[in-house]
Length: 158
Image (cartoon, helix red, strand yellow):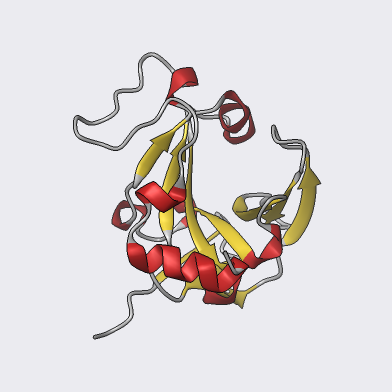
């Protein structure tokens, strides 16, 4: 079976990357923090092991920013056009990357697996019927597929 890959990059194409497999899970976060940070109604992030994220060209600049958790976030941005291509949240360290799905060449290939923090979503955002949606956060052990849980365990040892 062929491994599915996903390529993407910034607007000016200076920074290009490849996800070497499907992500573990895709979050559509509707929290106010992500709304402010993205300048949109939500943030769409594909969670993948950093070892499965290959830089094809360019070197993103890592920008330390505060986060709602208080643990901070390191955002990888193109030094030229400033587009955020992925980030690392304080809780996951640099072992886990949150790839900005909108920077993929084919973002439609990775729809959200879960909508989180829907208690603060914009009222005009309509979540599709049947989509997994939670008011705040969720327990990955109860939500992620078995393969993704195994990958998480290999990454963090738990």
